[in-house]
Length: 176
Image 1 (cartoon, rainbow, N blue to C red):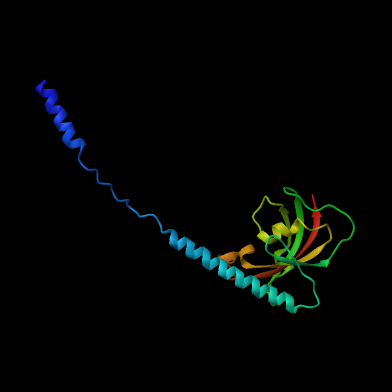
Image 2 (cartoon, one colour):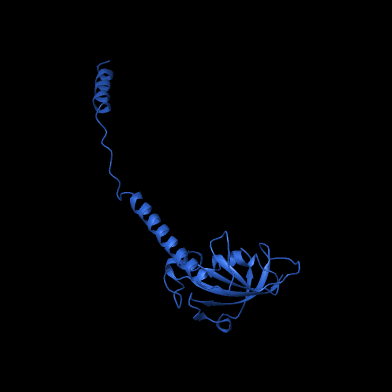
């Protein structure tokens, strides 16, 4: 009986002690930094869009269409007849070139060669992925692409710089 009372008192003493929480080894990253980064990105994207729309407005000889996917495009060669456009999973054959916004060639068609691309199944320039789905065989379209829909904050590691907007002229050769 004395043993039970003694055990009860020991448990009561240690059971009532205040628990001190342990500090994490590495504190969680601040959400403030993330919020600031997002806010900065939005400001940069708006400025980039404004610069592109200004350049487009100055080009009075060309009509550009605004895409809901965050890029602009114009037909160089439009096919008027009704025909199929590429769907997800289909293999398309394209030729394309990449220029800066001042029309200086970054990568020529010859450098890039003919490309086979599985629609939405392979990694490719985001805006061109979406733009190809607008095209018919034989059409050529020039896409004006802000950096956030092209190579983004890293560039391509070669000729396309950080946060660089581009123009890409794409010809759809075939759909399988």
